[in-house]
Image (tube, rainbow, N blue to C red; front, side, top):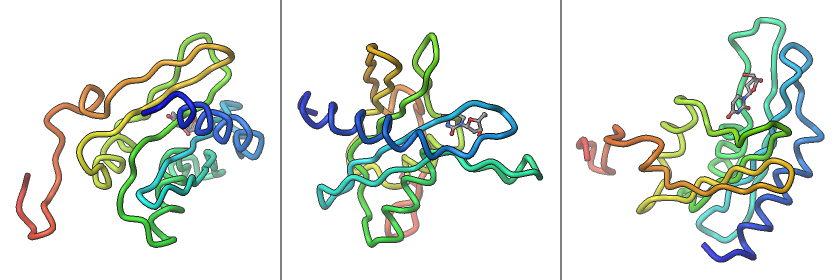
Length: 136
Ligand code: THU
């Protein structure tokens, strides 16, 4: 992934983080995914008074992309204001894997620091079905 694209994804995640709805945890997260078409889709965490209904920023971004017709996610960037980078939770890793073509870059940024990992590092031996319905 070229540094220009990484920069654009981080900027989009940082900008959208302002819309995070996190009145219960106070932990605001912004995410941006690069989809197969080349478009960028953003998401924020949306919490709920019934805490378990909360959805993470990463899944909001993926679901926005898929509902617009995308079927491939090439990269995801997460932006938080924390001491160390934030990596996607287990549920989001599984949802990202569903739309990963080969593997994908997972970028985490906070302040001036940026780290990049592969989804396969974060979710080794991940579970998914092939389009024919077999486990691959
Ligand atoms: N959260 C995300 O949106 N993404 C992550 O990668 C980690 C957790 C949200 C969910 C919840 O609103 C808050 O952060 C605290 O868990």
